[in-house]
Structure formats: structure tokens, C-alpha cells
Length: 389
Image 1: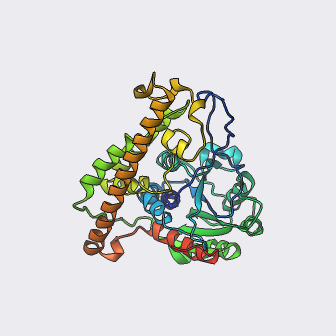
Image 2 (image 1 turned 180 degrees about the vertical axis):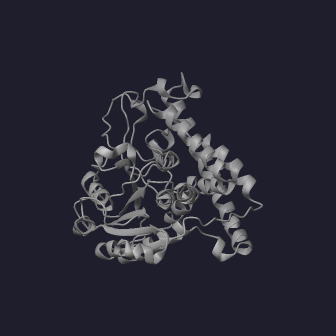
Image 3 (image 1 turned 135 degrees about the horizontal axis):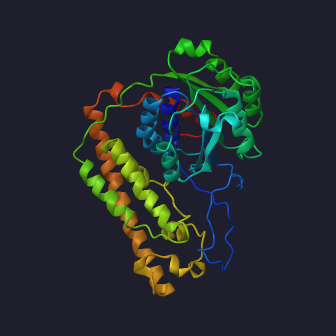
């Protein structure tokens, strides 16, 4: 189970990612009265990647969880380059479940941590809050629960994947895994299984069988593998640029201040993991996948999810209090231009950083077990849907 947790974060890392709002914004509605939420009942798009990550939190899987935390941003950065056959880049939505938790015994030890979302900070926050504390791991039931709870869409378009990680037999619980996995296939969802432990032990526990039935990959990982991070001459500058990047966000609405604080807290969480993790997060924040239209006025106006005239001015930051609509527009435009410049600098340094690491790090040390396993499965299944990198 320790393993699962590990996989939990990493998988999550996959993550990567685009946001859909659950509330329709109406003209002339003050934004301090609206809670901008992600919704599982969103308009389906053909060019979309949906991934549900089901993590075993029973026992003590702290090692696996730590690996997941450290590799989340590696996975997000991997998704930044994915393209459909028409060269368009899909949105990425991730959902998280924990299973095997004592806290939810009345629900089969299963709990939805996050519905489908493209909010990377939300995903990170949920990962860092995970704790191990259970024992009953019902793989079939958690798969079926994710099918019932989440809006996977009515068509088989797009890429729809489940990654379930754990280290106990796949056969436990009242819902047989074959029934749940076959129900997944009917919805065009591929089920991948990640066993934290010996490859053959996972086969004996039916993890390989679950993947075969679901048309996915069976993967066994060493959850104790230590990921080696290489310091580079570009790290300090990237850390400083990340701080400057945060100053380009202009919060609005009832959740704006809290979401801005969450952004900073996830930076802190990454730094606590390791400096290299914080740098990878900065790289993600410079990508197309890191969007915050639910609380950042720059992203919201760019994607036309709000009208500035409708925003309650009292919910804006101190520098904008008492400013006219035109003055606010000018301020937001300046912040957007500043952000683009900083993101470009981060991307340039990231390329130099990767080149330096490739020249100074052994291949077997460069990736974590979970990250490598997930990326391999995703690439193979994305290719079948005509996606490419």
C-alpha cells in the first residue's frame, strides 16, 4: 500500500492541464457572489484527455507518495507537447481517488479527492494532503465508483484512461474487477494497473489480468527507487523568475485571494520536496497547461470567461482599488505582457537545464519508476488515438 501512495502522486503528476468551469457566467452578475467551480458535467470535447488516478492509501505507503509528489511536474511537462492529428493540443483533465482508507469505511473505503479538473494547483494540493491510514483495498469497487461518479463523456472520442495503483490482490471486495473493467471498456476507457512490488507477485494478484481485460498496461514498479536530481547552473535564476511570475497574477472574485495563496503554498511544498521539484513546477507554470481563469483576471479576460464590467471591483487587489475600468484593463495588459516575457525566459532556461542534465546524469537515474511507467503507457495509448509528441 505504501507503493500505491507513491503512485498516487506520480500518477497525479501526469498529469497535466486544462480547466472547465461548472458555472455559466451571466452578464452583469457580480463575481464576488459567484463560486467558479470545475464541473464533472462539462461540455464534451473531442480533443480532450481525461485521466482518473486511483490511489491505494492503506498501510504505510509514504515512500510511494513522496515519489509521486516529486514527479508530478515531470508528468505535467510531458503533456505540454502532446498534439492531435490536426496539430491541435488537447485539454488535459485529471481526477483523483483514494481507496483503502479507514476514514471512508461506510463507502467501501473509497473517497473522491478531485473530480476532473485542469487546475494543477488543486491537484498538487490534494497530493500533498494524502495520508496513509487503512487496509481494505477494493480495486473493482473503486474502478466502478470512478465510472459512476465522473463525467467521462458520451462518445469514445479523445483519450480516456484509468491508472490504479496498489500492492494488495486485485480481487478483493464485492465488485469483481472483471465486471468493473469491462464496464470501463464499454465507455471507451482504458484501464492501466500499477502494482507496487514484484512483477510476478502482481501477476499472481491478478493485476496483470485486470490490465488485459481493460486493454491497458500492467506495470510493476519499485516504489523505493530514489530519484536522483542534478543541480544545474540555471536553477537559481529559474527560482527567481518563478517568484516574479507569481506577481503577474491578478486575483478576482470571492476565491481569488485564497487561490493566490494556494499558488504560493504549492510553490513552498515543491521547494520542501527538493529544489529540483520546485524548478520543474516553475517549468509547468510557464506552459499552456497552467491556466487559472477561475481566479486570475489575466487568464479570465484572455479566455473571455468574464467581462471586466461585471467583476466586483471590491474583490480586486489593493493596487486596483478605486481604479476605473480602463485603468484596470491597462494594468491587466501590462501584467500579461510581463508574464509572457517571464515564461519565455523560463522556457529558454529549461532547455539549457535539460541539456545540462542529459550530459551529467546517468540514464537510469534520470526518471522515477512511476513516472516512467505512466509515460510509457500514455504514449502507447495516445498513439492509438492518433496523438503524438
